[in-house]
Image (cartoon, rainbow, N blue to C red; front, side, top):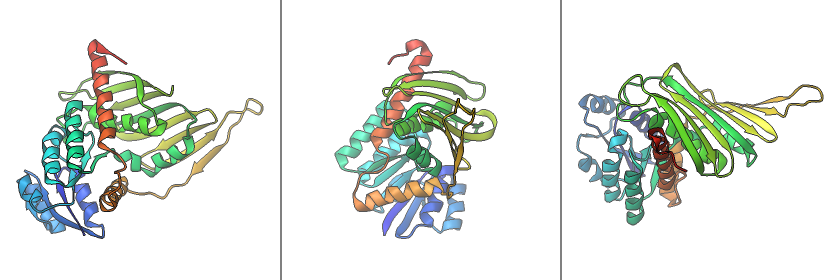
Length: 311
């Protein structure tokens, strides 16, 4: 049995807890939060021990922990977990800054502790299908990730919250790093940017564009990938994937192939692979270094927005 815990009982923390409760070979040793109402709710639902002090949970000798606290607390909480020796999955982004992210990566390496970052879209079956279809044939990627403003998120803007998904996805789908990246952004609600257009060119030459905002009244998550021999579209919410052939100038037509998917909950797959790596003592699927690269790109985007754009 793997002894696990969840730190932070916001929306994502409760999703992690539910999934752990449904897994074989997993014992939930407890959860931590400062909100007593949230603790009472999960205690009644899952029958797990609850704590308001992180040290009390870590004293239970955990094998693995999900860190689902606000981004501004990732650094402090992550270092406490690493010091305890427990493997940890930190929800994206890895930390509030690349300096904090580098601290976490260095601390985990020094302690020999597995550190995984929760860039959950990599476990979306639609994304995995797109990855299989595009190969190394990619010309450009367009991503739309928009929705209404989330009152629960107060410590970061839309680029760190939503855009971090797509910065990671672009690296994942292209197998390349960002060569040039910049963005334009505005803020109409709250203290951070809530509308951004990100444009990039990868070292491989692939062009990428991300439209992300919290000003759209409905949720949309879509990817379009132009390749030399095909065009791929995917809806990450419905997990629908379509493959379009090249346009024929001879008969003015093209073919469309729909790839049927068996719906899977990405969080469950993410946690399954995380715990498998802990059990088997193998590398985690998304490393701290992966999360750190995303943070570095985000900081380049903001430097560009402040007039300091650099390659």
